[in-house]
Image (cartoon, rainbow, N blue to C red; front, side):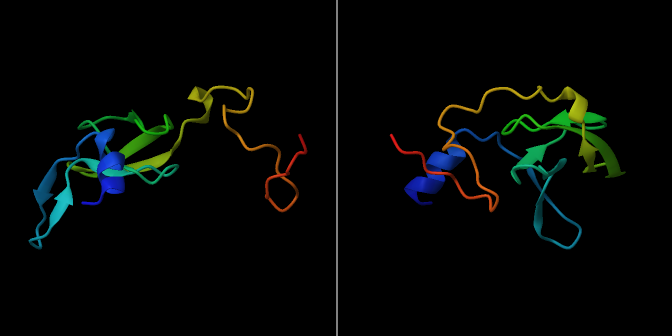
Amino acid sequence: MSKEQDEKAKGKPKVKMVMAAKGYMRPEHSTRCANCQERISIPIKAAIATCPYCDMPYRISWVTPDQPRIMGAIWSKLPGPGPWPKGWPGELDSNGKPVKKSD
């Protein structure tokens, strides 16, 4: 594992791996966050879950008793618009590129 991968893995909760029917390992009770694409564990039979990485809340359905699926985001639980986060590079132009401001 490289130093960069090791640093990235430090803050992540562990996802338990189990043997799948075809003999390969798969994450147990987990799915990928639709916002940040990190793999997240979902408590069994949970109807709502929040990604621990990006704090996006989701409605959850269960495909099988041990396989969750994200049904959609719960937009009403997200905070309202506010100031840009610290370190935001600035405004974006019509093409989505950062606008460089002169000092």
